[in-house]
Length: 392
Image (cartoon, rainbow, N blue to C red; front, top):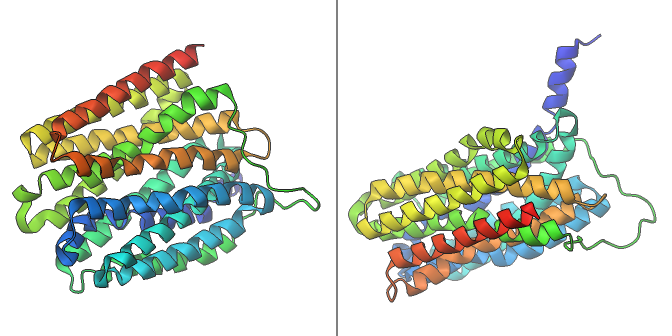
């Protein structure tokens, strides 16, 4: 007879397969981030072009989210997550030949976005359901950690290989291909939590009409990845002249530090959440404002050290915002629509990744410091409006 402690350990690790899949998809999503400046020199394209390649991810991500959530609610989590892993492999294969032309990069980022949308919506819901016996706060925390581990390790490995290994437009993508293939058997052994029901009608569109979704979740969501775009896609380019030959490893460092900060803040976010969702919301948006103010100072001084500080604060803002958003969705999702509503929230949140495109397009007309101060003002307004909505 198995001991209670062994049984508890087995129950606690049952989510690992879904977590590995989410981490693998997150790896594929962010491995491109530290390579932005490399492709500028390799392909001879401008800053706005590489930012557009980075943001092409969002174009694939939104339909991926809207597909993955409702389909996994209807047919089960495992088939959607497996399809997402297959798409993630295809995306890396396209990016692997991206050194031959920017069109391959656009295609690869588009497919990577679709893979992430399907994988994150179904995978996050799967992790939360597999964690149901561990307490309500464990699901959002585990989903955030799994996603962020991929976001951190992918850019770290890709950036190091691009900086020092040969074939720097090819080798950075090979580890992700191997990791994703290794995750497939783990996913196949993970218990399904949403069994298809015979005769259960058409797919249900997630209900986003709840007042709390419209007045709290939707305004919060774009800041989740808006701060990521500012930290890892926009700020490093501002200090590129000071970095010389070490620009790729600097981009890798800031991406890793942002992800590490996002993970490190999760336990703090959990403790804050126990004191009330309003307090967590205020903490998350307060960190967004603070991070953007430090980013504005970094833009004014062009100091790489201040960029690192800004990325750390923005990473903490990302972690708090993600925990807050997922917890709110879990609280208000109608029965049978958890993945669908999660997908809707994530579709809005990932729109924030596109913020680097207009910033890069106009920063030769408007000083970057002014642009970032304007973003900080918008974040402060969002903070006030969402807190007032929770009070009502």
